[in-house]
Length: 453
Ligand SMILES: Cc1cc2nc3c(=O)[nH]c(=O)nc-3n(C[C@H](O)[C@H](O)[C@H](O)COP(=O)(O)OP(=O)(O)OC[C@H]3O[C@@H](n4cnc5c(N)ncnc54)[C@H](O)[C@@H]3O)c2cc1C
Image (cartoon, rainbow, N blue to C red):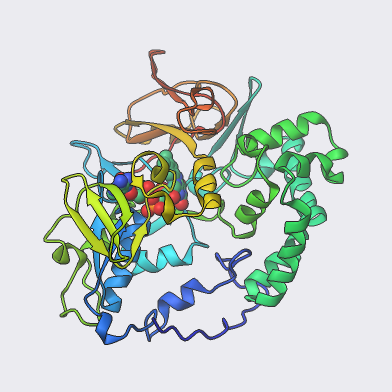
């Protein structure tokens, strides 16, 4: 395939933050928007089949772009299209949606929003803590509850924690300098700064970073605890304390955990939209071609085995027992499944890669949704604050769910090995009658009104 790459255009020091770096400082958004498309293939390859395992966002994006280039993607899907972007409407709920997987997407994900725009979908701010969209944020720690619209409404402890985190990022990671180079799309500068941070922080934990910073050392241990529980952005990051600090730096540098939007009507419309969308610019295929048409409406079933065929191609056997050979196979399901669910020929990967696949760990999470007839949590109490709000708590339970309304969510994340019940995320919603609807182990719990009107 021929791709002509030009260096990314330099931007202003205060240009919006995007996913440009720091590991891969590549202007994906410019590439996607380029009038000449993503590249060209020799005409002799047009119509060649490429297998794509998984019809989530990754698989369908790849299939859509490969189809535009003139290839014939053959998509396999074991379950429902959309994968971990799954929007479940409430029966009789006139538009109320439960986002079972991803639900908030940072505006810095300019590649993702390229497809949102292509499909004509709308987004709006997600009610994250202390944002105007949340209306009211409730912080409930060690039995003490605070109600806030902005950081200034909270006791000084919370401002001290926020300031210490900002200071620690400057002191330990030269945050502004690196983020400015990313905003400017200055590849050489980004790599020079990032490579130095990799050497310094690759084998040190997030907690190490916090505890060793002079900003937090000046404060009490309790400040660290509160930081872990309330954190930054969407809050509740202490389950990441044992992880490499580089992981956290990647998140904060790219603005992944702030300025997030939801997709109006459900995010599953994005992958499903790509399945049904007829691109304006197509090579080889007639105008009006879609992935759905190329597949006669449905993807192929689950992949059961991948092996090298006698002719050097890759051979896929699916759940119906059909076998088919391809020059290329793109696997987009959770990579760990190659070690557990798909009989994958050992010689296809190096020993090191097998070990990496085997060591992959996933974060578990659970969500509980309750549809109610109106966003009652915005009702004002006698003291002028709403009855409930976006809640960050160290409790197992939310205090109460007082009335009926549209959609309320309790959400908890926890790190750990798949199947490791000790770390399993658990969320809990409690009805007005005290009945537990479901529960949250720790970390994050939130309530949102997802009313389309
Ligand atoms: C509860 C939850 C909340 C999340 N919240 C957010 C969020 O707010 N913001 C955000 O950006 N991200 C969020 N994420 C992450 C986001 O949803 C995922 O990163 C993203 O959807 C992954 O897309 P993917 O295409 O890479 O993988 P997937 O969506 O997992 O797609 C892989 C597909 O492969 C299929 N498959 C598996 N095995 C086989 C097989 N043998 N043969 C064929 N197909 C197979 C699966 O059924 C699946 O459809 C969340 C995830 C979860 C679970």
